Length: 269
Image (cartoon, rainbow, N blue to C red; front, side, top):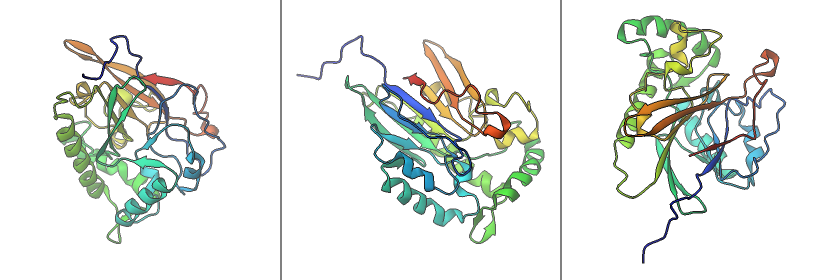
């Protein structure tokens, strides 16, 4: 006899946090009552020390790395070190990987995770050069290296393209009864619709948002961070319920970006 799943099953409830910047911010994460999963969408702590705060969390914790997780680090060695640091406190790091979790009703949710980085194609090929020049300031300040050389815009773009290829391939896979819903988690935003309204659309926006709008309908929920502002919008999917895009970033208190942040808010999928 097959597993009975009631037609009126409750959706999985997620707590979402990103851009906490616990290397400087005075914020103490607390489990949200009723949450079944905690999703960390990057830029949690540049030093990684605050990952310890999630040890013993009462529900599974999934994380994608943000760009600031690699500040001042060699990318090739930082990835395995970060993975080990996460595993030591019970956090599952997703980088071009998937995880499948089941809720109390037996509903299976596939989580597809990747940092994504910037491919600088937000405004098309003609806008790429300006976007890459605008990224120079951020990359110089970050001080990331690869193979002993400073990680430049071309290196970031290569990382981004690898993430994009993974997302395309994974989201093209048919469910065939293996999962009931898909959640994508990236640090970088998947659409210019997530641009910070304080700065509008300019070449620098391509360091924060990618043009992944064509992939959005392939998930029920797409979670991102990176922008220090909150977003919650829908994307039409003909013949199906709309896909949802959520950014639950906290941001920096000295810039008042944390105002109206709701760390205990639950999101359903």
